[in-house]
Image 1 (cartoon, rainbow, N blue to C red):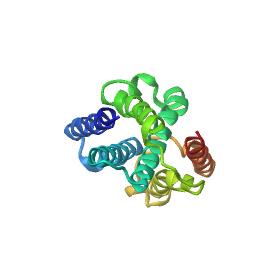
Image 2: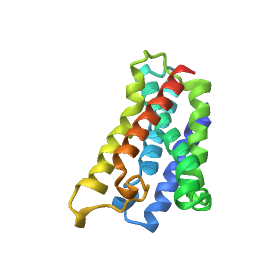
Image 3: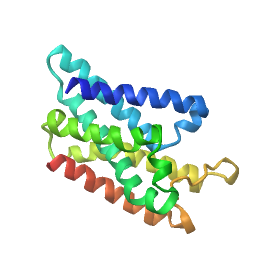
Image 4: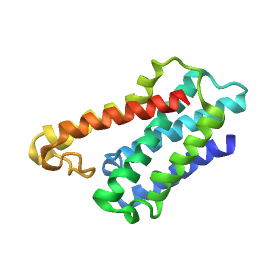
Amino acid sequence: MIILNLAIFLITAVCIFLYSRRSPMHLVLRYFTTLSNIFCAVSSLLVVIFRLAGNVPQAVLLLKYAGTVSVTVTFLTCMFFLGPFVCGYKVLLTGCELFMHMICPLLALFTFFAWDKPAAPFSSVLIGMLPMVLYAFLYLNRVVLCPEEKRWPDFYAFNRGGKWPLSFFFMVLGVFLISTVLWAL
């Protein structure tokens, strides 16, 4: 359990370092994949630290839950939307992308279900949703609402044809379902 959580942290740290060698950090940190993996890695490291100290507080397990929901969103979005419809699996599952899109999310799911699941009420589903919902508002602002010259490219293709309201609705609904399923299992 400690080794796998530590692996999530170390793999993510190496991937972020490698990303930063290819692109400036402000560009690396635009992506939910990057942010969700960093969040999950930090929460995994906290689990390791507290487990070594003898007791993992529920608050830390809730952070791990939110991090696991976040990387699960990344994983499922890549597998069922970005891979088949936007950029192809080869782009998403080569090099660091393999670790950030698949291996770390699967490790997070495994450690979450095996050892790191908090005893939390149903309302914690909202905590699981929070990182993606906050990012959704950031993405909406930077891709659709801000002045043209300051916009990010629509790298997730959620605004194709101006369909951001539909994409926004389905992403929030999807993260609610993912968060609920992880809470319920």
